[in-house]
Image (cartoon, rainbow, N blue to C red; front, side):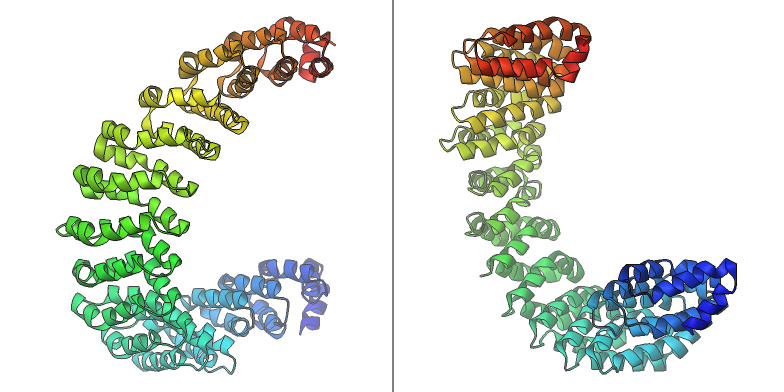
Length: 599
C-alpha cells in the first residue's frame, strides 16, 4: 500500500513532497520519521480526505512498531485529525491506529493515545459511538495484555452518557471487571478513573454499582490502588447528599486516614481540603477534625508536612459558628507541636501558612497564642522556616498593627542580626530587602536602618559584602531620594574611617550603588569620594580606586572622564606601588576612558 501511495504520488509533480514524506516514514533515521509524523497534517491535506481515509490511515495502522517518540508524536497528531478525514461523519476511521497505540508498552504513548481517543469520542454521533467506539472499549477491556486493559479504563466516562441503557449496563459491568482485574496496574487505572466515571453515571447506579466497587478498591492489598481510591472519595462525596456521604464514603475515608501505608495517608492529607469541601461543614466538624489531628501527628514526616500545608485552608473552611473553638481546642495544640518538629520540611511547610491563621483568629488570640510560635520559628535554625515567617509578616501586621509587631517580632529579628554566629547574621541580611518591603520606609528607617549600616563595618568580609548588596536592593526598593538623604552620607563618611577595610567597603558600596542611582547622582555625590581615596595611605585602597573608576566609566559624561577621572588615573599610574600602577594603566586602556581621551 505504501509503495502504491509513493508511486501514485511521484507520478504527479504536485504530490512529489508527499512521496518524500512517505519515504521518510519508512526511513531508518528516527529523526526523519519523527519529522514526517509531525507533518502528517500536510500529507493528509495534500492527499485529500478520501485518500487519507483509504490509504494514509491504514498505512499508519500497519506501521505501528516504531520508536516511542515517533509513536508519541503520532498519537498526538491523530487527536486533531477529524477534519482531515472528512469531519465527524468519518471520525471512526481514526480508531484503528489509536487502538493499536493504546496497547503499546510505553506508558506515555498509551496515555497520549487515550487522550486523543477521548477527544475524538466527543465527535462521534451516538450511533457511531455504539457501533464503533464502544466495541473498541470492549476490545481493549478484554485484551490479553494489561496495557490495553489499563488504557480502556480512561474511555468509559467519555462514551457512557450518550449511549443506550443496554450499552450503559454493559459498560458498568465491564468497568467492574477491570476494577477487579488480577493485575494491580489495571486495578490502579480503574481506581484512578473511578471518580470521573462516577460523575458520568446516574445516581441510583452510582449507589448500586460503583460505591461497592469503590469500597473494594479502597481495601485493595496494593497501597498504590488504595491511594487512588482516595481521589475517588472527593468525586463521589461531591455527588451524594450529606446522609449518603456519611453512610457510603466516610467509613472508607476514616480507614484511609489511618491506613498502614504512609503513601495512602499522604494522599488523604494532600487531598484534605478538596475532601473537606466535598463532605460539607457538618461531617467536617464530626469526622474530619479528628482525622486532620491524626494526620498532623502522623509518625511519617511526609504526611505531617502535607497536612501542615493545609492548616490555614482547613481552618478557613470550617463553619464560622465553630471555627474559633475548633482551632483553639483541636488544631492549635497540634500546630504548637509542629513548630518544634524534628523534621525541617514539616516546620517549613507550617511556617509557609501559619501566619495566615492571624486574620482567622483575630488580634487577641494572635498576640496570646500565635506570636510566641512566630518567635520560635523566627529563631529556627532552618533558613527556609525563617524566610517563610518574614515573607508573611504583612498579614500579621494587618491584624495586630505595626506597634505590636515592633514590640514582639522585631526585637527577635534584631537579635538575630547581631548574633555571634556570622552565618545567622548573613541569613538575616538576605531577608532585609523583603522585610523592608513588608514594613515600609518610615518604620524601616526608625528600626532597622542603623542595623544595615552597622553590617558595613562587620569584622567578617562575607557580612560586609552581603551588606553592600543589601544596600543596593534597598535603594532599588525605596528610591534615589531616600538614598541621597539616608545612605550616601553614611557611605561617604566611611571614606574617612581609620580602618582601611572600611574604606574599601566604601568603594565596594559605591560600585554597586551607582548601578541603582544612575549617572547624575554618581557624578555629583559619589565620584568626589572615590577621587579623595586616590591619595589613601594604603595601596590596596588606591588600586581599588582605579578599578572603581574603570567600572563606573560608563556612568560618567565625557567632560568628567576627560577631567577628574583621567587626571586621577594618570596620577595613580605614577604610584610607587606596582599593583596601583598596573590597575591605573588598565583603567586608562579601557575603551570607554580611552575614547573620551580622544585616542
